Amino acid sequence: MDAETDAPHLRLPRVHWQGDTRHEDGDEVVREEPLEIRIGGVPVAVVMRTPGHDEELALGFLATEGVVDEPAHVRSVRHCTVVDDPQSENNVIQATLAPGVEVDLARLRRNLFASSSCGLCGKATIDQVMVRCEPLTDELRVPVDWLHSLPGRLRAAQTVFARTGGLHAAGLFEAGGEALVVREDVGRHNAVDKVVGWALRRGRLPLAGHVLMISGRVSYEITLKAAAAGIPVLAAVSAPSSLAIDMATRAGLTLVAFVRDGRLAVYTRDARVVAGRASSPA
Image (cartoon, rainbow, N blue to C red; front, side):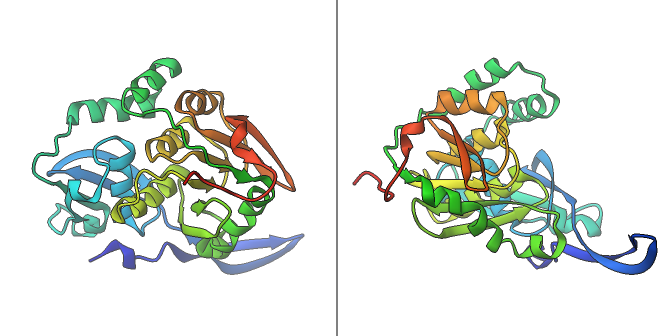
């Protein structure tokens, strides 16, 4: 079974109070389930995600971890149908790489462990990442008025959030244009991986000339994923972390935060944010 068919939400009973009046009713609640990602049959990661677009999530994970950067590098990606627990078959996904594509599984696992456990200091982590990420030199210019419109554009495309109020979103935009793709997930980083996986499938990496808009705050991990995908501008509704700003500075990425209520703040590479119409290099 394809997990794309799994509903990203379900209805559960609840007791609702309004003032001192008690009601029993139901509520649409976001699903959160584990997804184990395997490469060549070897488990490399488990992420907590909202079911749906799992293949894109796995592809985006591989791309942002530096394993692949074009569709030809992946022979197949699909859910495993042979697992110990039949109820888990939609929660295990297997990627088979093309012949000649090598992956250092030990390094990948070390990186993931360090990321989840904060086992490396911030500066050392960025140094390791920049070994495989060239600084972005995209001369994109993005109009500030258009940036102000992105939260509304993103929210308009969040169909599951409208029912549950419980999902983050990531949207990929061409500068000055409409959303190319919007993905929702209980985790911001998963939503970004789904967007990057969408682009990888279509041979669109690296994503020069594009803007990534996310709900919520900006972490180091989100900034890393944007840089790894070659996205020159990352915008968010809420605050950035100090390590996210450090990462954006090193990567040559424009980091825009607090995009709401007609305001925004640019923390790095502010020359890309301008008045007027959007433009990108010929």
